[in-house]
Length: 377
Ligand SMILES: *Cc1c(COP(=O)(O)O)cnc(C)c1O
Image (cartoon, rainbow, N blue to C red; front, side):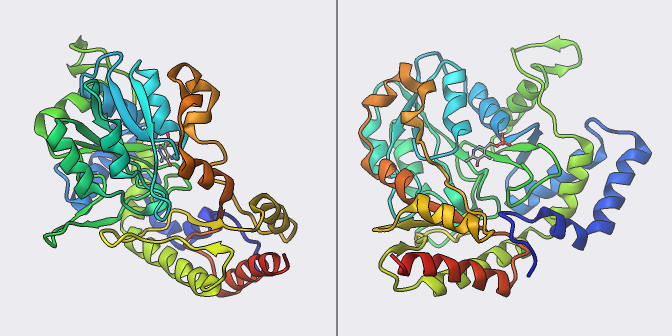
């Protein structure tokens, strides 16, 4: 059996090596390393894929979130509602910009922000909501957009884990996540569903004037070279990364299907087990399985993590400490929050290997060892 990895980008690369290498060499041949043709082509193709008007490429997903918030002219002290159960980048950029993160609960079944918790957290200072499409399924965007409209709030979708995910509204219409809110942000970190061979990110919007502003901010606040209208930053997607991503974008749907197949295997293997809660998908979204994350009930998650490592099966705890319990947020009253669902999840979740290259033998081996540990208790 091939060694099991949390993600296997090497095998994935080898299957499209010729195309990827050709893309890289084209950049080298033209020496257009910065803002080359590949960057424009990829941005155009990604806009078409997501059915969004503007894609603004940038250096990474954290920058994408930061630039999105900078473009909305939020003022120090303005409150931004975000889940506590997420990767640190989501919440960190809020504090970095001297805005106030307000941490709310997620739904226990789907791991995504709970719209009822958003409503309860709204004050006169609230300016924006940052839903995270965690692990690869959409947050309840219809309710979130309705709340935002009623209270005149911006919505920034953190789509770093869910690129390609389809959201279906109650009228039957569908949109890709990242193209629903005021602004969407994503990451092309190598392990993400659409991963570069280095860092990368992008920002999405359907609003023309916001797009102009996002572009300016990502480029030192300039529209015309050496004329700087606003304070911005330097955040670019490399041409080489764009060339690689443009090839991989063609395979994204295939990659998603492969992830979904692995998830179906796990679902079947763990069905009916009292101690294993398999991931649930809400009716309004599909799941692109950036992660396949179990909750354990009556079994020790850390012990399973250790046992699997002994069997040469990697597993990960996303995330062991929620944002509201991180030291960096002590000044925002992080410790005063009561978020029992979030605390439960940080103590019970474990993510199994899921990627495009897992074969049946590996899946059988992983599921077999999980069940052996769980049933042996
Ligand atoms: C990966 C990730 C980010 C940050 O992306 P980087 O490219 O690593 O900066 C932000 N939010 C979430 C939910 C992520 O998973």
